[in-house]
Length: 295
Ligand code: UTP
Image 1 (cartoon, helix red, strand yellow):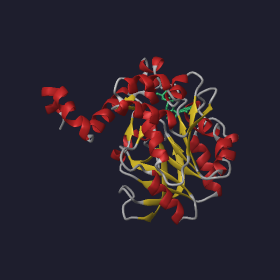
Image 2: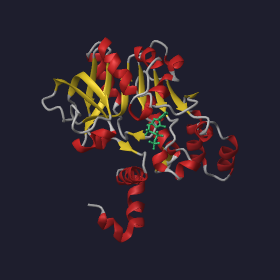
Image 3: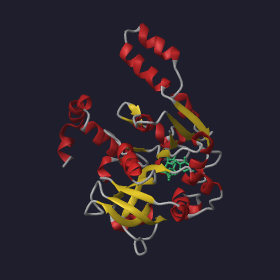
C-alpha cells in the first residue's frame, strides 16, 4: 500500500519564510515537519512507500530525502557517528516523488499520484500536519477493515464558528455514544468544503488523514474547481459517497499538530518539546521566567 503526502502548496500563510524554505521542511524539534509525516506513514503495517507530491519550485524537498555522503563522511571523521546515522536515515527512507505543475488544490495534488497507487486503497497524509506518537492510520485501517474495506477519514470537533476553514462531514453514529468523542465512528451522509457556520451540517472537521478507495482517482480526473477556485479532494469524496459507503473516525484534535502558520508551527514545536524528554529541561531553561506564561 502507498501513502500519498501532498506537499506542493505555496504555503502563503507562512510567507516570507516560505519564500526560502518549503513549510514542510520547517523543523519540529530536530526533524523537518514532513519527515515526521513520512515516518508516521511508513510505520503503518502494509505501507511500503511514501509518495510525496512536490512542486518544481521546491527542489529542497527531494534534496532532503537524498543521500548526503559528503556530510555523512565529515560527521564520521569528526566522531559524530550518531548524527551521521540520522543524516543517513533521512536519505534512505523509501520515498518517491511525483510533481504537481501548478498548485491547483489538494484534490489535484492527490491525482498526480494516481499511477503510483494503481488499484489499491491508499492513505493521504497532509504534509504540514503531524500526529506524534502512534498516528491515526492504524485506527483508520481497523475501521476500514470492519466495514468491508470502505474509505475512512479522520475528523475532529472544531469551534462551530470556524467551519468555514475546514472540510465538514455529517453522518450517523455507528460506534460510540457521542459523535464528538474520540473513537466514535460515523457512516457518512455528506461532506462539504468550507461551509459558513450558518449552513454547516456539523462541526466535525476533516483533519488531514484519509484512507481512500482507488475509485476516487477516477473521480478526481474530471473534478471541477470548488471552494477557493481549487480542485478539492472533499468534492470528489462527495461523489465517491454516491457510489460507496464511507466512514469518519472521530479523533482528539489535540493529537494532531498543524504547522501551516507561524502561530500553529510555534505551538507545535512547544508541544513537541513539552513531550520530548531530551528537550524538556533545555526548553524550560531557555524560556526562563517566560515559562510561567505556560498555563
Ligand atoms: P494547505 O492548504 O495547508 O497548503 O494544504 P498551502 O496551500 O501550501 O497553504 P497556504 O494556504 O497557501 O498557506 C495542505 C497540504 O496540501 C499541500 C500543501 O503543500 C500542504 O502540505 N497542497 C495544497 C498541495 O500539494 N497542492 C495544492 O495544490 C494545495
